[in-house]
Length: 495
Image (cartoon, rainbow, N blue to C red; front, side, top):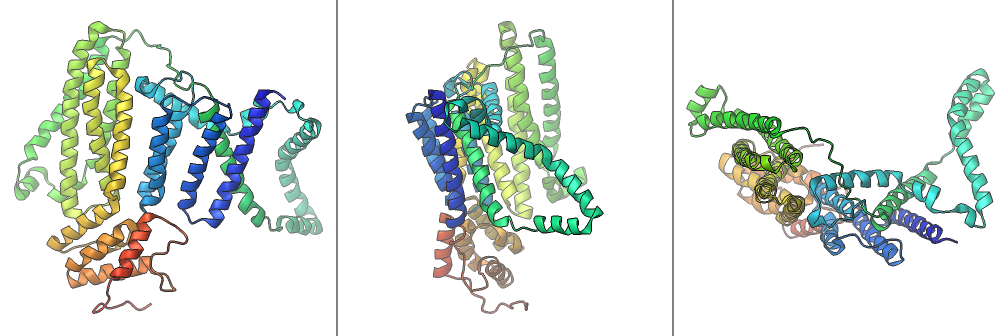
């Protein structure tokens, strides 16, 4: 038996075991904890496949593995769904970075294009799952069951092709003969749910595991530099485009400066908007403008990479544009501050603010690297900044921050969206239980009843951890046990 066949069978076996493990964890382990354990098992399986000789570790493997070890506990640290999505997305990003593609370049020398192509290649590899291994890596004729397996595959393919025709003809014939129709109905009424309930999760998890393990542990090189196809675009065209955008940003900032120091009444007289309406409008558009400008600058610099005579004026122009973009971000942050003061803080507003902070760091890093002829250092620095931002979010506990800001605002202004605060994850519960004591009786009672409706089940158990287990829920349950919200003096709505 060839080494390719042995390695292919090993990978398929590992993928199948990971699929079974995913289903076992899904059934027997609380939600979120099962995901963290399965990802840890996947990481260990990749290491085992490498040690078995299926592939060499990718460049910077130690750094990538260390980042994964930090992020996996994040899946069960905070109860926030948004933090779960961010941590899980970061783990997927690490998988893409660890993938062996075309160049096997160290992360510190890879460019933005390399990362994008690596991510796209990884998506394709995961989508393909075990198909390449089954069709090409494993030489089935080397196995003693080659002939029966080949016949089984032929039968399965025939059934797959015939299935649509059988369904259509069955429906037609069922209408033509009632007895046949009832027989067909009895066949379709067979209870396959118990089988599918386990078969589908096992199959899907094994498919994803096969793709990920093949991507990380087997394939060689993913950082392929695309050929340069555009050499006819000069600095005049590129510089004009960048300058036009910069002028647009400058004009917008000058308009912003007119209203920056106006009082509320004068502001409404000049703009026709209240400060609250102004804060609500345009915030996300500003963030979008800032975010989309960075790829444009990167593309322009890439097109001029071989035109040294044009780099100096372009860098001056790009530096001006970066300053304008930082002012745009400052304007967006100003609107966010007004927005929060009038309407309170939400998850979307907090995470967008964190994104803006990361974007500001990336702009400064762009100036320090790309504009100084060190383009290869830009992408690794941007990734480190993103990782650092994510770690800070995990440490800061976003839902607790939202609860604290809104409670402090309510202590001053009186109005409080208790329904929204109650919908926050368990991460916010300790802060809410402590801060609600400073609220006026109406808001305190409203928040108390909302929290009880949200977190106490019909049996009287508060904040269950047997279905979903996170450290945030553990802390929230202990806080609830020590100081449950009191309902004395609060009118409980009749059911």
